Amino acid sequence: MRLVELTRETWPTLEELFSANKTVGGCYCTWFMRTGPEMEAQWGAGNKKFLHEKVRAGEPLGLLALADDRPLGWVAVAPRSTYPRLDRSRTTASDAGPDAWSVTCFFVHRSARGRGLARTLVDAAVDFAAARGARVVEGHPVDTEGRKRSSGDLYHGTLDLFLAAGFTLVERRGTRRALVRKDLT
Image (cartoon, rainbow, N blue to C red; front, side):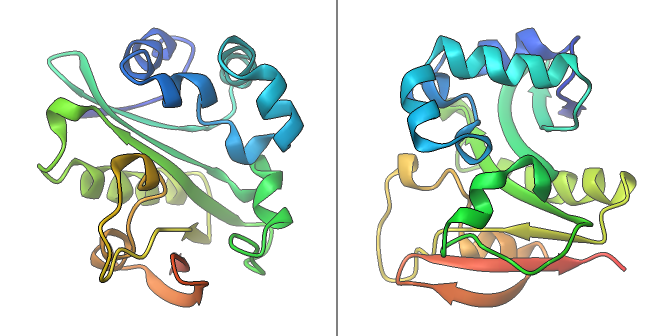
């Protein structure tokens, strides 16, 4: 398996991966970049175009996991400033500062689930952010303790996943979510 940055050259690979899931294909991992009305109005092709424009501009947005050049997974990781919606929600607000990066979304193709790929992706996301000057990386995972969650509810990652990757629990946010952080200094 190899991990590659989402770039102009790898964009078709992301398209292929997201075409496997209608929800992901509608959002195109832009939820935290846009307002609710923008998301609704641009669902599908509009969100895809919005993300593609960011890729063409050279913004660091995430990593793809490939096996034999077949896309298996995705993690969205970028400077926190890329995601203005994070600061508009009590669930995801933070005081981490301007050098913080956020891991906002995961997608693992159904054929690759249950094999530890999400852990590989979160570790790679931390390395990716660190190589680009991040001083801290945050996540906003779902706390699955005592409850079963659908795969559609787990795109933020799980609390156990982030804790196993060396993140620290900053605080629980309600009954379902948490803020976690990994200091890279």
